[in-house]
Image (cartoon, rainbow, N blue to C red; front, side, top):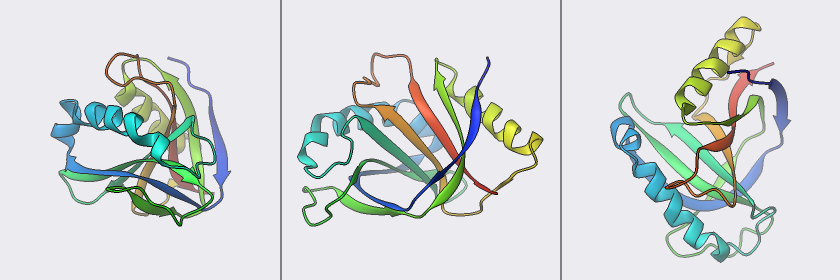
Length: 155
């Protein structure tokens, strides 16, 4: 599997989306896929999206067994937040970034972490573990995973 990895800088931004809290085991069993499908059915409720076709997944690791995961759209206007959604503020970061399509998403993560280490970068110790970007047309229950993986690093 060849991955093209690059360093990108993202400015701080605001997003509106839905929150899932669970264990890695629950995620592995497919709960995130159903959660993702539910978000796709509601994303049009977010009226001020910068790019409705770029779905952002934000993973915050809260403890050894679990994490908080948001699916969101970047927004310009934060005044209207749909019911059962919340506003998320994401700080500016430098990311190691790669695009991936295939079933072995975990291997892509492993490869990206190895690339970071091999190239002398350090992980940025923060709450944000990784930021994923999905095409708006992606159906998590049927399609082969296709996403951009971004891991915060120190540069």
